[in-house]
Length: 82
Image (cartoon, rainbow, N blue to C red; front, side, top):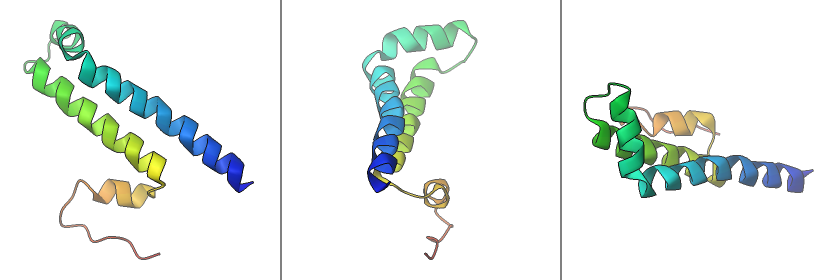
């Protein structure tokens, strides 16, 4: 059963990681689409969202819990005790 969980985690994380790669390698195309939707700072928003998607994919791939992933973005949050 542990092998199935690992395979599922890898497949789930690969969706995020591949999306992040597309965001970060095709920044100009994605930023043009973002700008057409009315986002004022399209290029920084595209890069920022790509980095957040990458962080989420790495968090899922490495098995970080949802609490740890949420606390990564708040410096005042202490790590959870397991």
